[in-house]
Image 1: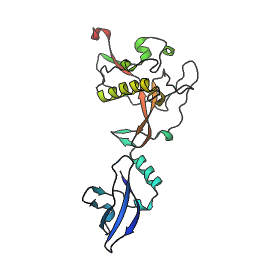
Image 2: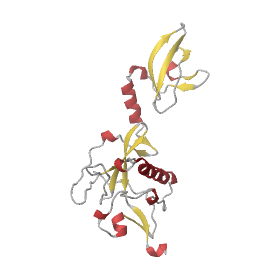
Image 3: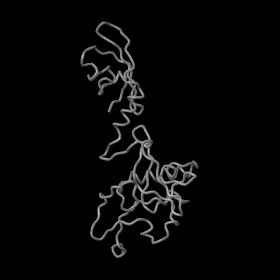
Image 4: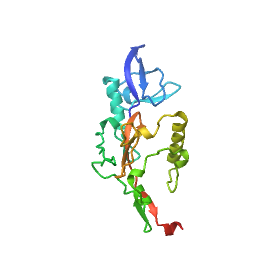
Length: 225
């Protein structure tokens, strides 16, 4: 992606010019640096004796900061083989304000990567506990000890959830609950019997959307016992 934007020249000597580049907000700060003028300057690797810089987008000097920032944000939508579109570009959730408020996505979520074997099946929470979906809530009054790893291999994710849940309790403000949709009128996440959710998460400089399906891999009681 393009980390820098050009904001102008200050002429010094006939063969040299000073250029100032402002970095992407989440990358390191760049100083002023001189370099020799030439037709390939814009794509050269430049070293000012302290740091090395490279301009990777020719013509960036002809765009405004807002245009260039938008371009960088759009280019960073896809990473780790997944797409995380900007939240503001997502259509509002179609919430059914009935006894069990829920929404259905326009297309099924991709859950094919759930590994299964002959003794496993995927179930939703109300199927696992065989209870009325209206009795299930997102977080509720639980504390950080409610977060369990089970067979989830991503320990970093579990640790992050535990820390954020702890900070919610400590600070008295929402860090997770107000980022999960659908929500009620108070901005609290609602349990969705359809099992589909959207998470509003800040990645690569902007709020983005991640899809969540609550299907869980389950084994029979005999296998556990």
